Amino acid sequence: DAPILVAIDGPAGSGKSSVSRAAAERLAFGILDTGAAYRALAWTALETGTDLDDPAAVEMLLAAWRYETALRGDARVLVRVPGHVEADVTAAIREPDISAQVSRVSKHPGVRDGLNAMFRRIVADSGLPGVVIEGRDITTVVAPDAPVRILMTASAEVRAHRRAGELPGLSHEHVLADIEARDAKDALVVDFFTAAPGVTTIDTSDLDFDGSVDAVIAVVRGAQ
Ligand code: C5P
Picture 1 (tube, rainbow, N blue to C red):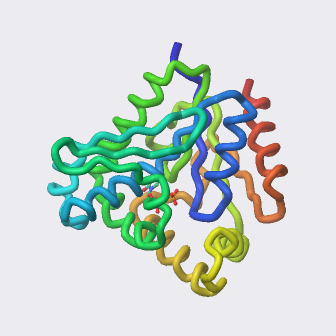
Picture 2: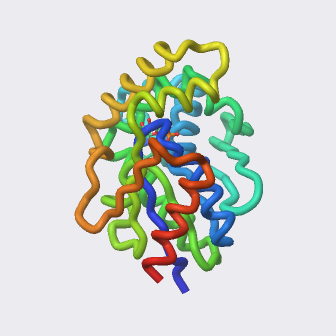
């Protein structure tokens, strides 16, 4: 049987990644962080000297690229280009430089189509009863028919505050400017600030972490 899908979209710093992971754990579902794949592809492009702004070059890289991540348990991310690179990029893809460069690969429609096909294959082959899949275009493009679709939002101030907590040493203003710049670039390609018809919005501005997880679980239970 195909797994039950819980699709979650939202901007950087909305709490989406950590909340989705905790919700998946409570549901005994898998979790697929699609942003990690975009980050890992950007890392691989930089590592192999691929021009990130050249769609044909990135698509050619993607055709040879192998991406490995478990949907349950540890969140390690491995990438491989046979004959070129093989690396555990779990930590590297969270570096500020990757955050700054990733929109250069995610802006290419052909690259998005290729990664979306990979995401659907990973989910279909998972053998799990359910998978939480989170990103920017999951509710609209990757899994528009998912029985549960959520847009997770938070005010820009709250998002910057949370990110500043994750990246000690950077000022609040600096983090806010980086988040806004990345969201602006990403929003040119995918609208992840507006809930599509049938998508439930969860605003986490006034929720703590557990409250946000509870809110996701309540939407999932409500749909069953
Ligand atoms: O979610 P995260 O911040 O890790 O995503 C990293 C980047 O990957 C985003 O800034 C965006 O450019 C891209 N992305 C995307 N579509 C998705 C998930 C991520 O374009 N579904």
